[in-house]
Image (cartoon, rainbow, N blue to C red; front, top):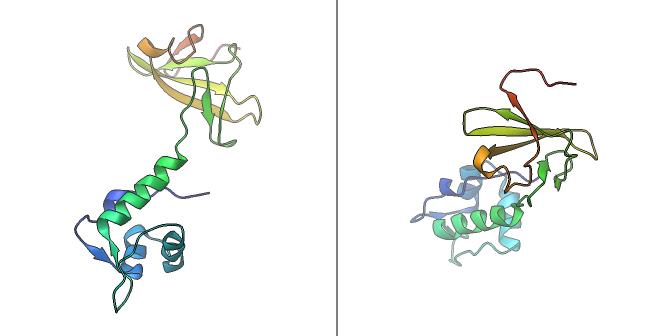
Length: 143
């Protein structure tokens, strides 16, 4: 599984060697070299390769943005399947957290894992879950 890195750990106005860039993100030097092969720009000097902080920050942010997946209306993202899944409407429950928001919970139809999605009650219809039953926080679900 690919790890998520905070791109703001790299300082914009600083140049990094491969070893320094690796230590900033807690990865190996080989991983930084793989980033260079996959398109991370470097500054060619007579000494070690240097990576501009702004380029490093932009590269990491771009890689993470490419991995993001939007859930279409009526779906909940399954962490086990790594795909948005359409849950059975009769099994979806809204667990109220506040007066205006809650968590959608349902079993994944493919793998059986627990699906969770945070929603505001005002946007429940937009998310495609208008007819779900509501449950107070901490209450046991009805079977």
